[in-house]
Image 1 (cartoon, rainbow, N blue to C red):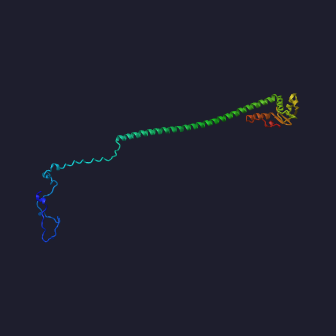
Image 2 (image 1 turned 60 degrees about the horizontal axis):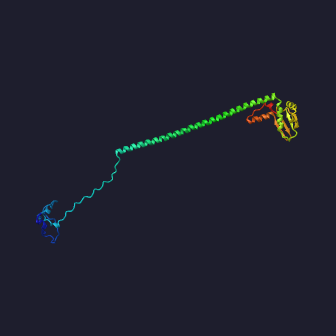
Image 3 (image 1 turned 90 degrees about the horizontal axis):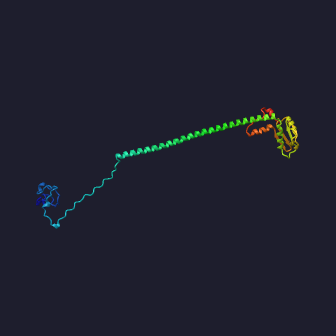
Amino acid sequence: MTSSDRRGPRQVPPPQGSNPRPAGHYTRFIPREELSGFSNWTPDAFVGLADEAEPLPTGLRRTPPAPVEPPPAAPPPNTLVGPSEEDWLQRVQDARQQGYQDGYRDGLEALDAARRQHLQQVTAQFAGLAAAFEEQMAALEQRMADAVTATALTLARQVVRSELSQRPELVRQVAQEAIGAVVLSARHLRLRLHPDDLALVAADDGELLRSREVQLQPDPGLQRGGCVVESDLGRVDARIAQRWAQAVAVFGAELPLQDDPAGAAETA
């Protein structure tokens, strides 16, 4: 650039007939023909001017500014990193192992519950069978006891019948036991017997009959082998059928001494 460039643009008079009023800079367009000593500006137009300028004294030289360090780069944002393939495989393996253990435990619990339930069912069945068996055994024992009792009573009845027919003198002992059962303060004792037994008792001159002043009275309504003692204080029933019924009642059975009900009827 020349010295004319440093003086500024040349002033051009306004055209004739225009407003004589002064105008400021850049109030009109300046044609290219009116300009001289110029050149186009480029970014490197000032390169070399600093070298042509006179150097400054040492004391006035400016220290070049220190280079500015760029700010540190911002840390990258936290990025979520997914599990790797090995992690996925390990997770799958752990899940499979955990599932196996859970299934094995649940299977054992289910098996134990089924075993307990089956054991309870079997125990209940055995308990029912045992109860039924005990009930049947009790019924069988009762039937056997009844059968044994009936057999024993039947044999005893046969023995009593045989004794009465073969040993009619036993009526004396029966009469003495009946008179001995009457209290000593009783008076007016009367002994009723079958007519056939009366002769056997009358033939005996027992001390008991004489001391108690017992009056003998025949009674055809009584069976042989038994008697009835009456007094002013009460009576003693020593009929053989009555004594037999009392003995049979101890066993909870009913077995008449005579098979014929008509023949078994006696007067009281």
